[in-house]
Image (cartoon, rainbow, N blue to C red):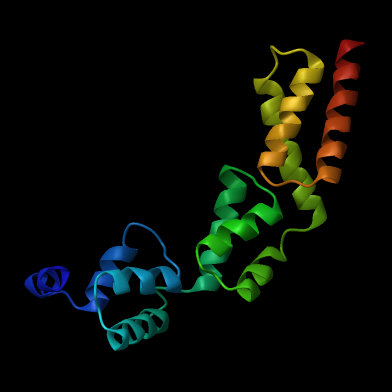
Length: 165
């Protein structure tokens, strides 16, 4: 039935891939999976992916860099969580590792602090210990490690004590 739909539409694998790319950037493997699901032959998929790569329409390294930048600007998460999310998009570990090199320890801490500040403000109606506990849980959910969370909570605790003086 799907094969008939493809013939009826008259779309080449390349046209189908372009339609799939239009709403948002995709990884090479996402394109391959999509085209396979649309019942294109292996040779059509290989040729289409090569054509898209040669024209610069798919580039997993660029995808990883844009993904990281977008995530850090909109909803900061830890380096570890970014790695997991990129792997879910079928990006190779070497590309992921290379893209993540721009995030150093200081940047990781600054991102965690921004997240903590946001949630600390949101939980302002709670008692201080519950507030700090919830901030810690939010940081943990975003993949920050124990040492980073401990440091951030300590900073918030000190700041809270200064505000109460």
